[in-house]
Length: 346
Image (cartoon, rainbow, N blue to C red; front, side, top):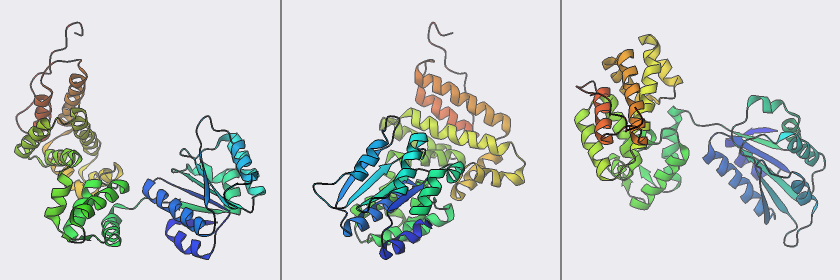
């Protein structure tokens, strides 16, 4: 049987299945679904848990041995199988099929993995688990649903977020649910049940270098060179990681290159395909109005030279080179000649 993760709670209230497989590409939701199953199993007397980590050296016969063995501490045991890649291989496939054909009465098998390839749903082991157990597929939230989830998540923990604060969190985490949950926990620690407005949210999030990093990239796309210069100086004073700053800028430049390669009316769809959230698309459109394809390509080459500068292939001031790159993105007077190579590397 297949169910959606939203149906899991109602399913568990009706009774437990002997086999569960939770999979999907949203780690937070996978973790929480597995936790719900473990809690429900414990309430039904499955007080002992054995954890198996499926890696290249995993021996699948150990699962069968645990299924057949008696416990000294509990009559009922939860077998917790972590299979990150979602591919059990030939031996694993046979072991899972055999388990489903002879399920022990005092055991529950809980499997979890990341997102599965579509071909996996056609394998014998997948079909066998579907027949004898419950498949719980986890889907990531759509960008439009994230603010609502953040608001509900905060309310469930007693956090009072106003709409602007919710939007700030949604923009900063960019679909990373684990990061969103961490931000909510941090705000809860800072403010408890007091109302959290946009100023409090900005203050809390801006305490992390991750916020400064993304804000710097946003301001570069917006063409705000003076603000970028101040922020870059602050990051330098805090010994910020130049490689992360370059990564954020280069990532946006590659997205700009992809969008600039299509006609104007198709750019919005292209930005969506490239994973740009709606809240940032106006920033990219602003940059595309300032920069043409050749200029973007020139900036990407300059970013590649800064990468070599950071790695020590070239010599020169890294922070100044980053500022010149940002000036280029802002379409302000920019880019001098690249740094000179070190001796012996000409």
